[in-house]
Length: 381
Ligand code: FES
Ligand SMILES: [Fe+2]
Image (cartoon, rainbow, N blue to C red; front, side):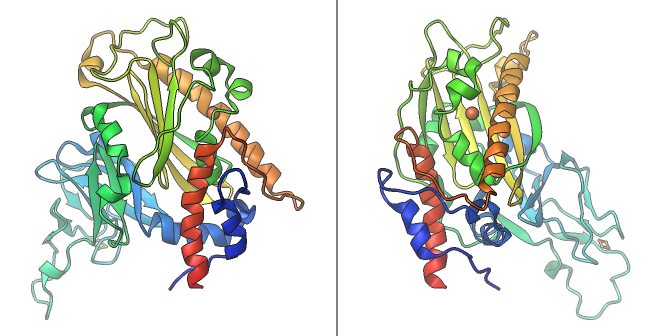
């Protein structure tokens, strides 16, 4: 059943205009449960989303459990250490197979009546089914979910019908490859519960106009006007910022750190990218961050934030990521605060969408990606 989109083509078109004339997304896009239902069905279950980084599923049996817009999905490394994705639903009586966000499985066995599956999803053992008529174990493997790994990012397509993943990620792959994101190791993961719409968080990530006021500590390390916008093929937007004179890393100031820049990258630049719809990828000279956004309600989003470093850096005896993690944990919390203020203000009955400033080209670019998808649905209905 298709989910109707409670927005008109006319109000969506106002966002798709060039920035100088455009109006921001309608308030209902941030507050109406019907819009979120549509987005969950069409953006999160209907195309590529980012599930995380391959470092979480490198070893046989290592797994992640994700709630993708109401579908529980298991991503697990198979016998060859390659990630595969399945619906987290047993083919016997439907129990969840795993119930922790991540971990390592010795074997994939349902906790209810012990049906056992291979890490390729095939049904291997189902007690007391030998005498059944017309029961073919080959037809009772786990439901597979389409998965692709691009430069270390795990992408899922629950619809199975999205265009090739290379089309989705486009030229962003080149930037990720330069940082060898596929080889990086995860050092930390923090999960935040944010009282704001997922798009408000994506928009906030896409501009630094708020940085002098909201993140004075960040603005000292890289000036909010120091960046340029990048363009290229694929469903992403973003650009660069430049480290201030004498600054080597975005971290708590005054903390000694021992992290060489990733070989071959510009040690003065930080690249910030948003891969539609739910991944925020920040490429720093000496580490990489990944935020993934998981809408829970129109005014609530779970944000998973992870920090990645090169393997030799992490293997050093004195490796300590707390200066980078602590810095961004504070910046994250400052961001969530203003996102929550925005969400609260937008719920005013008098709210009407604002105008983009000339410092919000990436906010506009993200909103246009959303509006393009809305418009397809509005025109169909
Ligand atoms: S529900 Fe999984 S074995 Fe019964
Ligand atoms: Fe911010």
